[in-house]
Image (cartoon, rainbow, N blue to C red):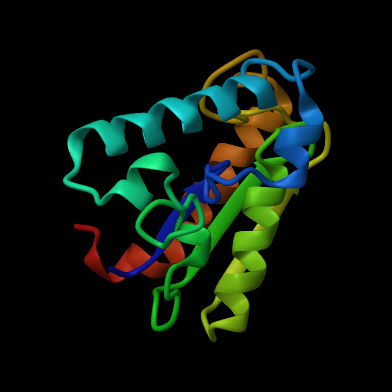
Length: 151
Protein backbone atom coordinates (compact mmCIF):
# COMPACT_ATOMS: atom_id res chain seq x y z
CA UNK A 1 0.00 0.00 0.00
CA UNK A 2 1.37 3.39 -1.00
CA UNK A 3 -1.37 5.61 0.43
CA UNK A 4 -4.91 5.57 1.82
CA UNK A 5 -7.88 7.74 0.88
CA UNK A 6 -10.22 7.70 3.88
CA UNK A 7 -13.41 9.65 3.22
CA UNK A 8 -16.14 10.45 5.76
CA UNK A 9 -15.82 7.05 7.38
CA UNK A 10 -17.64 5.33 10.22
CA UNK A 11 -14.60 4.56 12.38
CA UNK A 12 -16.21 4.23 15.83
CA UNK A 13 -19.40 2.17 16.04
CA UNK A 14 -19.89 3.18 19.67
CA UNK A 15 -20.89 6.61 18.33
CA UNK A 16 -18.87 9.81 18.35
CA UNK A 17 -20.36 13.08 19.68
CA UNK A 18 -21.03 14.59 16.23
CA UNK A 19 -22.99 11.52 15.18
CA UNK A 20 -25.05 11.32 18.38
CA UNK A 21 -25.73 15.08 18.50
CA UNK A 22 -26.83 15.19 14.85
CA UNK A 23 -30.09 13.30 15.45
CA UNK A 24 -32.18 13.64 12.29
CA UNK A 25 -30.60 16.88 11.07
CA UNK A 26 -28.18 15.88 8.32
CA UNK A 27 -28.60 14.90 4.70
CA UNK A 28 -28.11 12.61 2.83
CA UNK A 29 -27.66 10.54 6.02
CA UNK A 30 -28.27 11.58 9.61
CA UNK A 31 -26.81 10.55 12.94
CA UNK A 32 -29.85 8.50 13.94
CA UNK A 33 -29.64 6.50 10.71
CA UNK A 34 -25.97 5.80 11.38
CA UNK A 35 -26.75 4.63 14.91
CA UNK A 36 -29.42 2.34 13.46
CA UNK A 37 -26.91 0.92 10.94
CA UNK A 38 -24.39 0.28 13.73
CA UNK A 39 -27.09 -1.48 15.74
CA UNK A 40 -28.03 -3.69 12.78
CA UNK A 41 -24.39 -4.51 12.04
CA UNK A 42 -23.64 -5.47 15.65
CA UNK A 43 -26.84 -7.52 15.88
CA UNK A 44 -25.83 -9.40 12.73
CA UNK A 45 -22.40 -10.16 14.20
CA UNK A 46 -24.03 -11.55 17.34
CA UNK A 47 -26.42 -13.71 15.31
CA UNK A 48 -23.71 -15.18 13.09
CA UNK A 49 -20.93 -15.77 15.59
CA UNK A 50 -20.25 -18.44 18.17
CA UNK A 51 -20.27 -16.30 21.29
CA UNK A 52 -20.37 -17.08 24.98
CA UNK A 53 -23.39 -15.98 27.04
CA UNK A 54 -21.78 -12.72 28.19
CA UNK A 55 -20.92 -11.70 24.63
CA UNK A 56 -24.41 -12.58 23.39
CA UNK A 57 -25.87 -9.90 25.63
CA UNK A 58 -23.76 -7.04 24.31
CA UNK A 59 -21.00 -6.62 21.79
CA UNK A 60 -18.01 -4.35 22.52
CA UNK A 61 -18.43 -1.64 19.89
CA UNK A 62 -14.96 -0.31 20.70
CA UNK A 63 -13.27 -3.60 19.90
CA UNK A 64 -10.68 -3.04 17.14
CA UNK A 65 -12.34 -5.64 14.91
CA UNK A 66 -15.56 -3.59 15.03
CA UNK A 67 -14.25 -0.01 15.17
CA UNK A 68 -11.00 0.85 13.37
CA UNK A 69 -10.60 3.87 15.68
CA UNK A 70 -9.35 1.48 18.38
CA UNK A 71 -7.12 -0.68 16.19
CA UNK A 72 -3.33 -0.67 16.12
CA UNK A 73 -2.70 2.10 13.59
CA UNK A 74 1.09 2.01 13.64
CA UNK A 75 3.20 1.55 10.51
CA UNK A 76 0.49 2.51 8.04
CA UNK A 77 0.96 4.36 4.73
CA UNK A 78 0.27 8.08 4.35
CA UNK A 79 -3.45 8.87 4.51
CA UNK A 80 -5.77 11.58 3.32
CA UNK A 81 -8.83 11.96 5.55
CA UNK A 82 -11.56 14.13 4.02
CA UNK A 83 -14.87 15.13 5.56
CA UNK A 84 -17.43 17.92 5.46
CA UNK A 85 -18.14 19.94 8.58
CA UNK A 86 -21.89 19.19 8.26
CA UNK A 87 -21.29 15.42 8.14
CA UNK A 88 -22.44 13.51 11.24
CA UNK A 89 -19.21 11.49 10.85
CA UNK A 90 -17.05 14.60 11.31
CA UNK A 91 -15.73 13.48 14.71
CA UNK A 92 -15.00 9.97 13.41
CA UNK A 93 -12.70 11.53 10.81
CA UNK A 94 -11.07 14.04 13.18
CA UNK A 95 -10.50 11.48 15.93
CA UNK A 96 -9.07 8.95 13.48
CA UNK A 97 -6.74 11.57 12.02
CA UNK A 98 -5.46 12.34 15.52
CA UNK A 99 -4.89 8.67 16.35
CA UNK A 100 -3.29 8.06 12.96
CA UNK A 101 -0.80 10.87 13.60
CA UNK A 102 -0.12 9.88 17.24
CA UNK A 103 0.78 6.40 15.96
CA UNK A 104 3.54 7.97 13.87
CA UNK A 105 1.89 8.00 10.47
CA UNK A 106 1.72 10.79 7.91
CA UNK A 107 -1.85 12.09 7.65
CA UNK A 108 -3.48 14.99 5.86
CA UNK A 109 -6.90 16.05 7.06
CA UNK A 110 -9.08 18.15 4.77
CA UNK A 111 -12.28 19.75 6.08
CA UNK A 112 -14.89 21.07 3.69
CA UNK A 113 -16.83 23.87 5.38
CA UNK A 114 -20.54 23.08 5.18
CA UNK A 115 -19.83 19.83 3.35
CA UNK A 116 -22.36 17.06 3.84
CA UNK A 117 -21.82 13.30 3.93
CA UNK A 118 -20.55 12.15 0.54
CA UNK A 119 -18.94 15.46 -0.40
CA UNK A 120 -17.37 15.09 -3.84
CA UNK A 121 -18.71 11.61 -4.44
CA UNK A 122 -22.52 11.63 -4.17
CA UNK A 123 -25.37 13.72 -2.88
CA UNK A 124 -26.35 17.31 -3.54
CA UNK A 125 -22.77 18.60 -3.38
CA UNK A 126 -21.25 16.08 -5.77
CA UNK A 127 -21.10 18.46 -8.72
CA UNK A 128 -20.88 21.84 -7.03
CA UNK A 129 -17.59 23.71 -6.64
CA UNK A 130 -16.80 22.13 -3.27
CA UNK A 131 -17.42 18.62 -4.61
CA UNK A 132 -15.15 19.18 -7.60
CA UNK A 133 -12.48 20.66 -5.31
CA UNK A 134 -12.69 17.60 -3.02
CA UNK A 135 -12.20 15.19 -5.94
CA UNK A 136 -9.33 17.23 -7.38
CA UNK A 137 -7.48 17.37 -4.05
CA UNK A 138 -7.92 13.62 -3.61
CA UNK A 139 -6.45 12.97 -7.06
CA UNK A 140 -3.48 15.25 -6.33
CA UNK A 141 -2.81 13.47 -3.04
CA UNK A 142 -2.94 10.04 -4.64
CA UNK A 143 -0.73 11.07 -7.58
CA UNK A 144 1.97 12.21 -5.14
CA UNK A 145 2.26 8.67 -3.78
CA UNK A 146 1.32 6.62 -6.81
CA UNK A 147 3.06 8.49 -9.64
CA UNK A 148 5.90 6.00 -9.91
CA UNK A 149 3.39 3.15 -10.31
CA UNK A 150 1.12 4.79 -12.92
CA UNK A 151 1.83 3.72 -16.48
